[in-house]
Length: 346
Image (cartoon, rainbow, N blue to C red; front, side):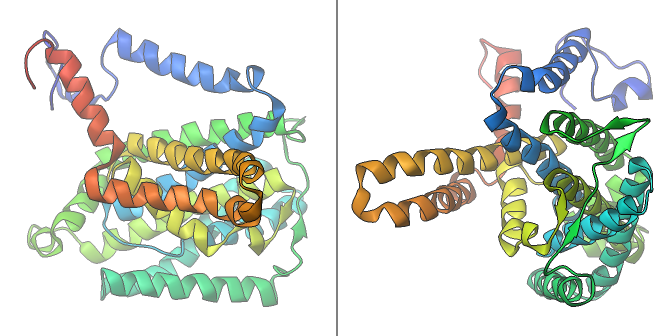
């Protein structure tokens, strides 16, 4: 691993650490502090955008573990979010504490993910993608017809030690806190035995099996972990919306989540944050800019308002696949290395 000049490893703990220098610790603390203070500097109309960034990041972190690190393509991630959202709403309404409800929602989604992850033991690639796509519609059918998903369920405002999350300001900090915690665990999962096994399976399944990696076990672990994250994100989303409904978990979300890890960089936790922020930022830019364009071109106003955000996101994905397939994180690493060795050529 590349290190700044003059920084040496004298034990394994230093070699494995991903935050090394006081400057790096300071920058990390500053970023987290700014994230928590952000609602104080932006108008309330932007709170919805940033809350959805943190919720989406939680879900995409799970998909990054499953697809980015383990190579198992899933087109049903939003359905597992729905499972976590509905189960979490039911237990919350029963008086279960929020922390326990989050764990139950994650486990419920993870167990369902195990069921639909079983085909991964025999199939892979495009065939696996279609099996998870079928899982999305099966789960949605069950939720609509047997769990009241067509009408949905009201979700009571949760609380922790008497502190109620009954406003967007408080839910913002709840979503951010959960996102930071889940990112910490995701980063450490990728650096432990499980993470190394995921990468080995992704890079070459036959070679991993030859080296003694239990590919069947670790594929199921990857599905459970990815869906566990999705379940937690689903519960946070329905808490924010105040209502559990299948309408919040569309097929488009499944596709955009995959696009986010492509744009950010496959197999990168930092890239997950970049991809979510970039794609949702482009979508928000299109949503804000569409009405202005509609005023300029009133004859196509209806088309512009509906199509511009989707068009911009789709164009972004195509351009990244063509010109930067390794994502924003790869470009960021190149920039960091260039700064470190400046003025010498990279």
